[in-house]
Length: 490
Image 1 (cartoon, helix red, strand yellow):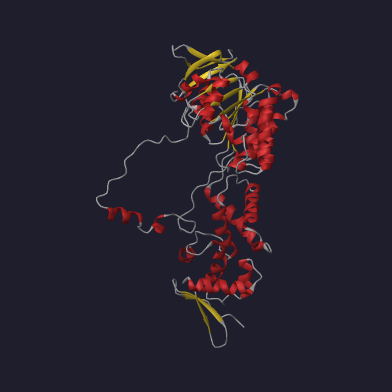
Image 2: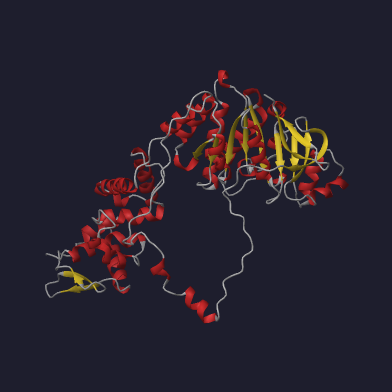
């Protein structure tokens, strides 16, 4: 089998090829501004070399997951697994020589850097008998190997930069050939860029980037201007795996596409008057926006496969083994039942309301994973409101008996929802008004003054009406629903 792949043509329409065996030893750097065609170039290289070499793609935007079906790449959703599971998956990838795409688009930048660093380090630390050749493609490499400190912590930056440096400096002996793509050379750490011996330079406009690109291509500074004039999908290539002299390359067609949407001009809708547009924008937006408290059934959740199941699939990608289908995902009703059960269990734990919301949400995610719900069905904001509902004793948000109360509760801030629903439940059942101790427990405070301020705020917001009889007993009415608690027993 030939180790040479065709990536495009030169100005004379002669084919330009890349020697994959040479590339494994000499690595590749791709530069180009946004829209220059970097992702198209990487996709062409991946598609052409897929039959002859293992591929590992670090994909911060989720663009390359479309390689999975036609080329058999296993997609790993970085947001769905813990650090330990990511490390285990990377170790099995080296062991079974599986081609994978690590999709990080569900993570914030700092979490992307940490996840990619753990993944790369696990690839790098594989035992010697597993040092099989593999292309490791890192798109938007300036994110993982920044030249200067940014908004992330120093600890995460050092971890990610060390992993990228290991890949480019020491990965060759372990069979790992780094291919890094960046929008700007000036943003990429020099000790990462300097280890590449092959270059494909696309369109760029800043003088500092053009000058560095010209230096890497062995061009004179006055020739650097042509880099600014390159069209989309056109690159200048140089290196032992490409050409011994700079060569212009027009990247060939690809078979798969990106999930990204191509934005084309589209005129806005024509309305006859400005009043019509004003009415359209202000037409009771709260009614049209679906919220957590709508009585409609929840939307379907898509769960990522369990790490053990994904490892089995990775193992099944070895040559000669037909991959087994993954276990069927739970139905929507099953996941919602699991989530309701988890929230109810958490709400019953002593002192749960006194914990920070972030700690509670983390506990919730762990419990979901333990129940094999891998893709979180609630984000942090939704979790706070559902947890408040569970604390107030509402097991099912779709219960029609609670529909009117939840409609009113849309206007209640997250931190006040649990005590409001506690009052509303008592009013619905015509039970006695909860005392300050009960409200303090569900609110997560030990301050009587905060409870007084809480009730005062709810009353001033028009959500409740407080009433104290001649015996000093308090009762609460919900004016929007016309229901009231019984007086608080003395």
